[in-house]
Length: 147
Image (cartoon, rainbow, N blue to C red; front, side, top):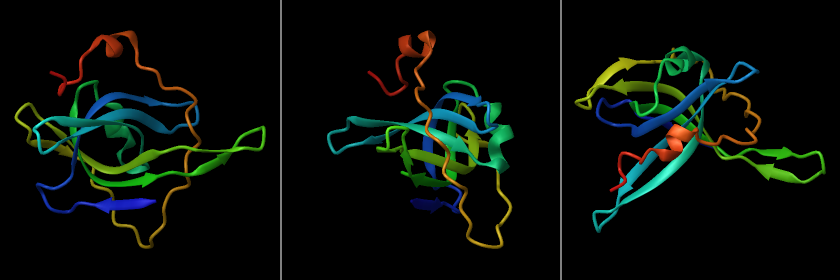
Protein backbone atom coordinates (compact mmCIF):
# COMPACT_ATOMS: atom_id res chain seq x y z
CA UNK A 1 0.00 0.00 0.00
CA UNK A 2 1.13 3.54 -0.73
CA UNK A 3 -0.32 6.43 1.28
CA UNK A 4 -0.17 10.01 -0.03
CA UNK A 5 -0.89 13.20 1.92
CA UNK A 6 -0.66 16.46 -0.06
CA UNK A 7 -0.98 19.33 2.41
CA UNK A 8 0.21 22.20 0.18
CA UNK A 9 -2.64 24.17 -1.48
CA UNK A 10 -1.57 23.66 -5.10
CA UNK A 11 -0.48 20.05 -4.72
CA UNK A 12 -2.57 16.98 -5.20
CA UNK A 13 -3.68 14.66 -7.93
CA UNK A 14 -6.19 16.06 -10.42
CA UNK A 15 -8.85 13.65 -11.66
CA UNK A 16 -12.06 13.49 -13.66
CA UNK A 17 -14.99 11.68 -12.06
CA UNK A 18 -16.90 9.25 -14.29
CA UNK A 19 -19.22 7.54 -11.82
CA UNK A 20 -20.01 7.40 -8.11
CA UNK A 21 -22.44 5.04 -6.42
CA UNK A 22 -23.14 3.54 -3.04
CA UNK A 23 -23.10 -0.24 -3.10
CA UNK A 24 -25.36 -2.56 -1.09
CA UNK A 25 -22.73 -2.78 1.70
CA UNK A 26 -22.73 1.00 2.17
CA UNK A 27 -19.36 1.70 0.54
CA UNK A 28 -19.19 4.70 -1.80
CA UNK A 29 -17.31 3.55 -4.90
CA UNK A 30 -16.58 5.14 -8.22
CA UNK A 31 -14.44 5.44 -11.32
CA UNK A 32 -12.03 8.28 -12.05
CA UNK A 33 -9.37 9.04 -14.65
CA UNK A 34 -6.04 10.85 -14.40
CA UNK A 35 -3.61 11.92 -17.09
CA UNK A 36 0.03 12.89 -17.43
CA UNK A 37 1.72 14.76 -20.28
CA UNK A 38 4.86 13.08 -21.65
CA UNK A 39 7.93 14.75 -23.20
CA UNK A 40 6.33 14.74 -26.65
CA UNK A 41 3.29 16.65 -25.34
CA UNK A 42 0.95 13.65 -25.56
CA UNK A 43 -1.21 12.56 -22.65
CA UNK A 44 -0.97 9.17 -20.98
CA UNK A 45 -4.28 8.31 -19.34
CA UNK A 46 -5.07 6.04 -16.39
CA UNK A 47 -8.45 4.84 -15.16
CA UNK A 48 -8.99 3.92 -11.52
CA UNK A 49 -11.54 2.20 -9.31
CA UNK A 50 -11.92 4.26 -6.15
CA UNK A 51 -13.49 3.93 -2.72
CA UNK A 52 -14.31 7.13 -0.84
CA UNK A 53 -13.51 7.16 2.87
CA UNK A 54 -16.17 7.63 5.52
CA UNK A 55 -15.26 11.31 6.03
CA UNK A 56 -15.83 12.27 2.39
CA UNK A 57 -18.42 9.74 1.21
CA UNK A 58 -21.40 12.12 1.47
CA UNK A 59 -19.60 14.78 -0.61
CA UNK A 60 -18.61 12.07 -3.11
CA UNK A 61 -22.25 11.06 -3.63
CA UNK A 62 -22.95 14.62 -4.83
CA UNK A 63 -20.32 14.35 -7.60
CA UNK A 64 -21.53 14.19 -11.20
CA UNK A 65 -19.89 12.61 -14.26
CA UNK A 66 -17.16 14.86 -15.72
CA UNK A 67 -16.69 16.76 -12.41
CA UNK A 68 -13.02 17.61 -11.81
CA UNK A 69 -11.50 17.06 -8.37
CA UNK A 70 -8.09 17.43 -6.75
CA UNK A 71 -7.30 14.52 -4.45
CA UNK A 72 -5.34 15.54 -1.34
CA UNK A 73 -5.16 12.33 0.72
CA UNK A 74 -5.36 8.85 -0.73
CA UNK A 75 -3.93 5.35 -0.57
CA UNK A 76 -3.21 2.94 -3.42
CA UNK A 77 -3.91 -0.64 -2.42
CA UNK A 78 -3.53 -3.99 -4.14
CA UNK A 79 -5.01 -6.55 -1.71
CA UNK A 80 -5.35 -10.27 -2.47
CA UNK A 81 -8.64 -12.10 -2.17
CA UNK A 82 -9.14 -15.84 -2.18
CA UNK A 83 -11.68 -16.99 -4.76
CA UNK A 84 -14.03 -19.94 -4.26
CA UNK A 85 -11.78 -22.18 -6.35
CA UNK A 86 -8.87 -21.49 -3.98
CA UNK A 87 -6.92 -19.20 -6.30
CA UNK A 88 -6.01 -15.66 -5.34
CA UNK A 89 -6.82 -12.51 -7.26
CA UNK A 90 -5.49 -9.00 -6.67
CA UNK A 91 -7.62 -5.89 -6.96
CA UNK A 92 -5.96 -2.50 -7.46
CA UNK A 93 -7.98 0.26 -5.80
CA UNK A 94 -7.50 3.87 -4.74
CA UNK A 95 -8.99 4.86 -1.38
CA UNK A 96 -9.72 8.61 -1.25
CA UNK A 97 -9.79 10.31 2.16
CA UNK A 98 -9.79 14.03 1.24
CA UNK A 99 -10.59 15.83 -2.01
CA UNK A 100 -11.73 19.23 -3.28
CA UNK A 101 -14.13 19.87 -6.15
CA UNK A 102 -12.81 22.19 -8.88
CA UNK A 103 -14.93 24.90 -10.47
CA UNK A 104 -14.92 25.75 -14.20
CA UNK A 105 -11.78 27.87 -13.71
CA UNK A 106 -9.90 25.05 -11.97
CA UNK A 107 -10.15 26.56 -8.48
CA UNK A 108 -11.02 24.40 -5.47
CA UNK A 109 -14.67 24.90 -4.44
CA UNK A 110 -15.31 22.62 -1.50
CA UNK A 111 -13.11 20.59 0.75
CA UNK A 112 -13.58 17.28 2.49
CA UNK A 113 -10.90 17.62 5.15
CA UNK A 114 -10.80 14.55 7.33
CA UNK A 115 -10.19 14.95 11.05
CA UNK A 116 -6.66 14.13 12.21
CA UNK A 117 -6.37 10.52 13.34
CA UNK A 118 -4.78 9.71 16.69
CA UNK A 119 -3.04 6.61 15.37
CA UNK A 120 -1.97 5.31 12.00
CA UNK A 121 -4.81 2.97 11.18
CA UNK A 122 -5.76 2.11 7.66
CA UNK A 123 -9.22 0.90 6.67
CA UNK A 124 -9.71 -2.77 5.83
CA UNK A 125 -9.46 -3.55 2.11
CA UNK A 126 -12.75 -3.55 0.30
CA UNK A 127 -13.84 -6.59 -1.70
CA UNK A 128 -13.44 -6.38 -5.47
CA UNK A 129 -16.24 -5.22 -7.71
CA UNK A 130 -16.85 -7.92 -10.30
CA UNK A 131 -17.57 -5.48 -13.11
CA UNK A 132 -17.89 -1.73 -13.41
CA UNK A 133 -18.86 -1.25 -17.02
CA UNK A 134 -19.48 2.24 -18.36
CA UNK A 135 -23.05 3.23 -19.13
CA UNK A 136 -24.04 3.72 -22.78
CA UNK A 137 -23.68 7.49 -22.35
CA UNK A 138 -20.17 7.12 -20.85
CA UNK A 139 -19.08 4.69 -23.55
CA UNK A 140 -20.12 7.17 -26.28
CA UNK A 141 -18.46 10.14 -24.55
CA UNK A 142 -14.89 11.05 -25.41
CA UNK A 143 -12.64 11.70 -22.43
CA UNK A 144 -11.80 15.39 -21.96
CA UNK A 145 -8.19 14.78 -22.94
CA UNK A 146 -9.01 12.79 -26.11
CA UNK A 147 -8.23 14.70 -29.26
